[in-house]
Every structure is written in structure tokens, then in C-alpha cells.
Length: 408
Image (cartoon, rainbow, N blue to C red):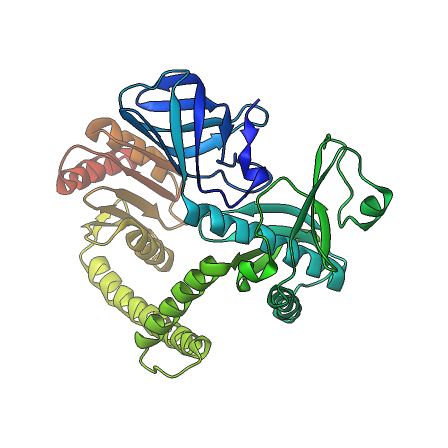
């Protein structure tokens, strides 16, 4: 069993230990030590990072796991370590300390949400730049609810209250009755109880700061409904809160600088742009319809008549989506018409619905058998691609097949 020094002193940054077992694969090494300052992933808190130094080797630790036996995993530099060797453990303190702030801050925020709204915390996890909790909350959670909780949580932080950690083989009745969350049956002795006087009492296996003052600012960054009455709240504490808010503010001001009207608030500028975009889209649609009308007239004037049907064939430069929209509009407004369109990578065959005796899908299949490629569709519209010859040649084949199908 690995001695967990992080429970004895969460502020211990360096120590020495002995290697008990070694596993190596592809320059990745896993070390089992007799004792450790590295916290293993668990309880929503990510594992610690740092380095393990030995005589002639270094391991850059990026993953720590286990309960009784704690394994340290990372990239090996230098020779292979051996069981029995003494090593030096050096914690990435900035990473650990920020995680301690997030975890303790979560206790405060969860306790406040429980007190204000009877909202129990059902999930918790610390990420690289922020943390999240999930709470039960009936109705609509709003920024007004969030602000009230933030103000209270930061008041508690400013009180500089002690964070007390006690371990019990059997919980006293008064501790059991004061728990914010009932103890899970999965938790076996010894049980670690983390308490903040007058604020929170909870069983927890994470690492925590000594005082609420160390948490720094607690800021909710986002919240949304996950399912039914379960809401997810994203937040950050300490330096992570400052970094996250700075990134948001930088994005805010840079976005505002890109606006024609640079005056706050950004929301009004975005709404103005949306209205302008809507107007431009309407103008674009009107111009497209006008262009389609003139283009259709020109194509119909030079359409080839086959068996009483006007056949339009064209090599199109537009992308497939725009070409299809035009073709559908063309045959829809011109009875007794068939359109054969070839782009550099696509085919579109379409007919007016009153044209009988021929299927566009059947025509497409016959053409693709000769040109290669694939596709499909319906009686009135078919699309394909992947042909291996020039579009002009494809259209020639299509008109030939069309005449045969129409028995002309």
C-alpha cells in the first residue's frame, strides 16, 4: 500500500520515495512507489503532474491512478529505472494548488446553492481551465439566481474561514446529522470529513486549501439545463477565474472592435448585424430569382426539342447545391422541359412533373454505366458524380440516352 503523503500535508511539494515496481512500454513508464505526494485522479479532481528524478533518468508524470497502490505514469527520459531505487518527487505545484482552490471552491459554491435553493450537487469535475457541477433545480435557473449565489460564495471566501479535515473510523452522530450530502454506502473507513465552520460539512477524498481566503474569486462562467431538473454550472476559482474572464473580455472587446458601430453593448451590435444580414439575404434572394429568370429564358430559347420536349443541357460552374436549386426552379416553371446539367464533379437531371414516359433516375443510371461514378434519385430528379470523362462528353451521352428512352 502506498503511503499518501498528500493527505498528511497537501502543501508538501517535494519528497523522496522508493520504487517498488516498474512497468515500461514505448518510452512510457509506470512506477509504483512506497509513498507519494502525487494525488491520483478521483472524485472529480484530476491527477497531479510533476517529475520523478532518479540517477540517470527522469519521468515526466502526467497521469496518477489507483487507491491502495498508486501508480505514476509518464514519459521516460534516460535509462530504465529499477525496483528498489530511491527517487525524488517534485510536484507541479501551480497545477496542484489551482486544483485545490477549485475543489474547495466547489464545496463553498455547492453549500451556498444548497442553502439558497435546496439544490443538491449531483456531479463535479475539474477541467484544465474551468470546473463544473451539476445540481437539481426546479424551474428556470437565471443569472439572477447565479449572482445571488456568487455574492454569498465570495463573502464566505473573504471571511477567511478555516478548512478543517478530520478522519474517522466511525462517524459521530453529530457529524452524520450535519453532512450536506448523506454518506454513500460505498465509502468505507477511514472516512475523511472536510468542513468549513458554519458553511459546509462533507465527506471528500480530494485535496483542499487551509482557508477559504486562498480560494480566490469564485466566478460562474456558464450554466444550462442538462436534462429535466438537472442543471450544469461551469465555474472557476482563483487564477483560473481571472484567466478565463480575461479571455472572455479580450474576445468581447476584439469582437466589438470589428463592428461598424463600436459602442457597447455587444449584444445590440450583433442584433444590428443580424438585421443587416437578413436584409442582404433577402436582396440576394431577389437578385438570384431575377438572374434565374433571365438565365432560364436564355436557356429555353436555345433548348433542343426532342419528341416534343424541350431539353436544356448546360455545363455549370456553380456548386451542386446552387445548381440544383436553379434546375428545380427551371423545370418547375417550364412545362414539357428536361434539364441536363453537368458540373466538374456532379450531374443533375430534372424534369417537369408533367413529362411522362421517362425517369430521371433511369436516365442517370444508363449514363453512369458508361461514364463511371455513382448516384441516384427519383423519377423527376436524380443526382450523381464521380464520372471519369469531361462534363461536355457526359452531356452528349445523356442526350443520346434520352433520345433512345424517348424512342426518337
